[in-house]
Length: 134
Image 1 (spheres, rainbow, N blue to C red):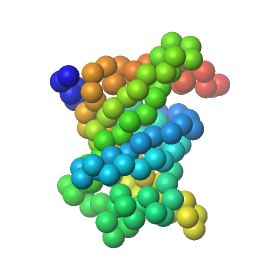
Image 2: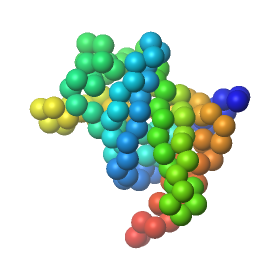
Image 3: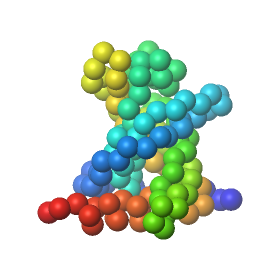
Image 4: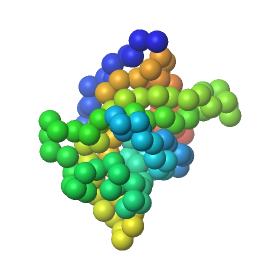
């Protein structure tokens, strides 16, 4: 399976709130389960506890530009009705923020997708956006 490059990050990408599980794998093979709080065509916002942050983000400081932390995310999106497909996307942790004592947000920017992952995410986000009241 050849990875497909993600589209460039456009700041105007609309995010949609979702609550679903995501597995985040580091380059060393260690995996953590966290929760997606929103998704766009270019990335995910993930909620984690401090234990996960200590594992994923050395020094618990937001990575500096150019020194992103590469991770692989695996999550499910419904393609047809309630039939979920698994999306595997490589990306970089580009944002970290503490929002409560033991709650952190991680911003992960997609860099590449396996197979049809980008199309699945694009269709899912488009569907959710079409259901948002204007």
